[in-house]
Figure (cartoon, rainbow, N blue to C red):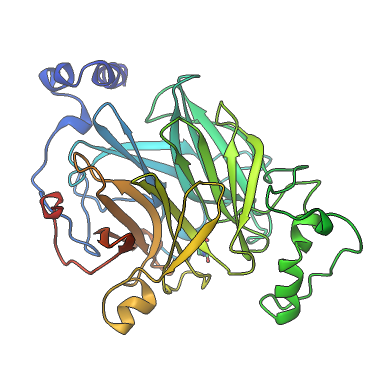
Length: 386
Ligand code: DGJ
């Protein structure tokens, strides 16, 4: 264990050094040299990668993939193990780095075994030297009503991460694009069923924002994005999944700065993934249909804090493929290594009855002018980026 840690440390200081000692898990190029969307993706031990709803952090030329560790059977949709980490130098071959954040056996812990931990994302804070993990957290046994974020941190990229706290988001602060007139007066009711015209009206009127102002806003599907200047943002499905919230994080990435906006009120977006190209910010999201895939959406903005403009469904395939995003749901968009302006769309093909068998759909982001589009590729490699 000590040797492994030491070698990892060496790896961050000098990749060459790690290659010489030959023990850095990530440094070993493997046998695979292309992506095979939807197929089993074996790690260095021959086991299908177990990092669902994941995201990637690049550190010193090594890629670290963090995602939900699933187990067999429907119970596997809950967090029975934790957040899994893998490393790679080429994005095709991945080494198992173990569990970066483990669930707790303590029933009083927010991250007790059987809670829900989804869509973990890790970012590095150069000011504090900490690796910071955010994830969607649902306390055990309460379905998806908790709608919280969990925050954990570590001094080492692969962990172990220490769970710090869980919270609702942006408590006590108004969105920057929330009209004063909606901040007071009679509170519109939020009738069930969700999605009804009355519900939509109340949502547009900011009823849920007001309801949750004091204790914090709901946060389910989430992602993080770090801008070129180091400013980080949390993007999340809030207001009963009706509206996205985009919030600037505090300088230490452990909380919020208080600057945030609502985006696409009442439009029911999930699975947000943000990337930046040519000074513009792009976002791919899904609709809200549980584990069933639906048509992706895309959007563009000049600033993370808006205005966001819809660009439509990015999929370019058969009707069935377009309606289901090639049977997948977005989780992250990764800048392609050594290819400025090129990006990899990462998505999950969920298998809710046996989640450990969930598949990964990685596709190149193609462009129609300034519009990101996706086409099915049975097999492809980074060399396909022109
Ligand atoms: C869709 C979300 O994108 C997933 O992360 C998960 O929360 C499922 N819904 C649960 O039904």
